[in-house]
Amino acid sequence: MIRPAADRITGSNFAYQHLSLERFLDDMATLEREHLELWGVAPHLHIPALGLADLRRIRRLLRERNLVVECLTPEQVAYPVNLASSTGWLREQSIRMFHKAVDICVELESPLLFLTAGRGLEDEPVRHAWDLAVESLGSVVNYAEANGVECVLEPLQRTESNLVNDIVGLQRMLADIGSANLGVALDTVAMAVAGETVSDYGRAFGNLVRHVHLIDGAPAGHLAWGDGELPLGQYLSELAEIGYSGFMTFELFGDGRYALDPLPALRQCMDAVENASDRSAGIAPSSS
Image 1 (cartoon, rainbow, N blue to C red):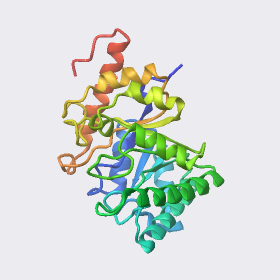
Image 2: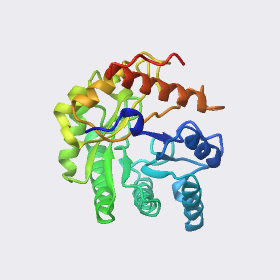
Image 3: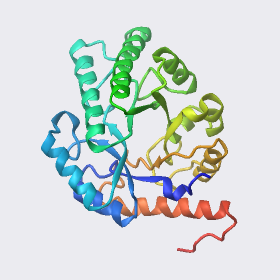
Image 4: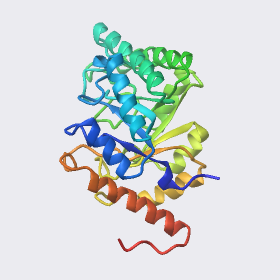
């Protein structure tokens, strides 16, 4: 039996980069979240700078609030990190960063590491960047497997990458890497921008869908439920139909509207999930 959707929503620090790590963790405890997706962003978890003392402090803060990490998502779009870069030092540095991210997953007991393919230069042949991405991702996925950490790969919008943008590209990348340790992350905004559906993902990947970013948009954006135009309630129903039983994260950021106080937007998301679950069970939605 699949647990209720509200029980599978992780807490996340995607909208908390201008607030302290303690404030984020306190808010997650307030929302009664037990599982977290941690965004590897400064100042909370800038992966290249994290040392053992930092990780011990994070572990202590988590234990004090009875929180566990389900997924580590290194920043890999806005930072100078690019697994497909044709600049040798940048690609090598990026691979080392992801290897360190695997080590951090082990230290924080996170079973999942979140990956994207990077991007090639727009004025260079895509094939070259693709081959570099396959090689780099393969190195990270293999290192993760050797350390007991599973990986998921998310498509990006075309404005973010010229490599993996849709189901076809994702299928091809998974085939080229050829590792059972690499699954799929479904991002509802990237999916909608590509003109695809949850059912399409179910048909293409089945139980390889191992993580979900449940986000509203118009169709792009990283918006709280109800602040965009995507049918998130329908997406929840379709995720249940394809048998998805894993965790889901509200990845809220983009235009900064939630940056000063993310908690109300996250409450809005949680209320919407609970109301959607009540409707699917035939219970009248809450008036709150």
